[in-house]
Image (cartoon, rainbow, N blue to C red; front, side, top):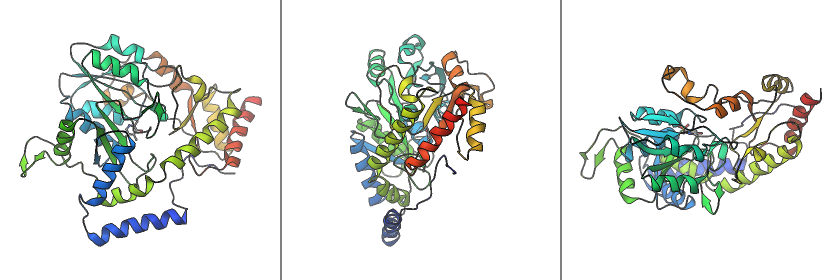
Amino acid sequence: MKVRFRDLSTTDQALKTKLMNAVERVLDHGQLIGGPEIEQFEEEFAKRCDREYCIGVGSGTSALYLALRATDIGAGDEVITTPLSWISTLQAIIVCGAKPVFADIGKDLNIDAGQVEALITPYTKAIVPVHFNGRICDLPRLREIADRRQLRLIEDAAQAFGAQANGQIAGSVGDLAAFSLNPMKNPAGYGEAGAVVTNDAALRDRLLRLRQVGMGPGEVCLEPSLNFKMDALQAALIGVSMTRTADVTRRRIEIAHRYTEQLLSVVECPEKHHGHDLPSVYFDYPILADKRDSLKVHLEACGIEVKIKHTPLMPDQPAFKGLLGADVPVAREAIKRLLNLPIHEKLTNEEVDYVAECVRGFYSA
Ligand SMILES: *Cc1c(COP(=O)(O)O)cnc(C)c1O
């Protein structure tokens, strides 16, 4: 049996027809930049995130970058974030000119909210938590710190659309939140796309300007920026994906529980390595495994595609030449044992059981 880590092909004929129809509608009316699909997407996405405004952009990375720019974060400012994420989280901070400061992660692999306060200096401007793997961060605590210390809270919710805890949905608590809609994310784009959400009309206006080469009303350029707009065709396709998000999430959670039931006795499963009861939408299914590298070789020999991600940690990437100090022992230990098992909505129960059986087989040998 071959089990793929992800499968981005469109095999569902009904889905394919809906996508083709969506493309056709855009081709017919010809509004390829801006237009009704962008507006519909933004309205629907904002609503689904429990927010007033959404600004569609060209990628999740751009979404993060623009969220930081919109809050005037730049040279001389410090931004507290996690060391464990896709590199975009850090690049957005660096490219804005700010200095990243890393708080270690907790057992849930998310930023340890309890460490944030000690890292705040007179230069700190914002906290950028990541809902890593779709597991929501301790937002009430982060919000409380941000309010009390007058900092911006900007959620990197790229992996966490629809994740909820304490009646709050990912993206609904930060001053701003950034989402990625690339083909691996949920809702999936069919190419590059992202979105920023906020409740603040002034931030919304600033984002619209930054998205469009710094142009304000009346074609007057008000500040330096580039073109970060979302394509109308992409918005049309994402509109179709938006109708599937609940099904995708439900299936991923089902698969995660199926893995956990079978694997809990041999590896640390995501459900069990979090400190608080913070649910996940399982962008990935990360296990913490002993003899991780040999397990990977074994699973690959079984025809199972697995991935080691986020090694080295963001601050240790060669781009930053060791200049970004990061005192993050928990994250450094975690990445030695982290392994991501396949989890996507097309996996059958048979495939999930096969993966679990092969993991168990490795430890019983
Ligand atoms: C995917 C992702 C991004 C970047 O999104 P792109 O659309 O690929 O630019 C940022 N942060 C996290 C946590 C992500 O997973």
